[in-house]
Length: 310
Image (cartoon, rainbow, N blue to C red; front, side):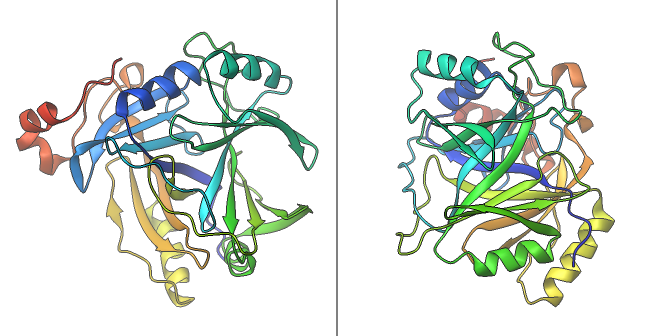
């Protein structure tokens, strides 16, 4: 069993409009944009990162806004809901705020005794706010969101799978322990990691397969402390028969990827070096940062990228 995984690192999704995406996360949800860079494989497309003050692993939602991309189709074989933690008693604030700003899909419920508010993002993204203890985390309070309601980081994520058994076995191998089941959803939790420590598997028998597009999660990333830990995880996954990519330098972390039995793309990302490697903390996310190989083409790339606002 792998012992190096520390919970979630980040979740990466796709969007149709960069400016709309930036407004939603910085103005509606009040998160901080901690990095403005580009897709490593398509430099004419932004890669935008939102999180807490420093982009702590376990707090960062990232997006590829592909521009006028067709909306994804919800279904099985995907991360259906990305869950953010908010302080206890905060859901009333968020229900009013999201309704006032035109968010759709608002639904209050509970799971395993935790109060939840589900809602949709601009591209139909599946989100939930879950009331939770702060567990040492401090919210970034942008756009008028008060500290007593601010988003603390991720709570976890919920995957919708036609057959959850093989993914459950994988999570166990990754160090997650089966927690409780309510209806068709079973929770898995990892001990000794960060506060973004839950994964829910929802079994949807007979459901149609998801089709990726705007609003779809592209991949979900799990945190390891450093490259040595990542190497151990990679070796263990290879030994178990998974096809794992070589280590890829993503400037702010190192990454490996593999496809799960349920169809979801998993990443294992390092906590090092962090988002302050090329910007000081006070100015995170302000300047366009490019991978070194694209710097010679900066002028052309800046012409292609649409304005997104502050």
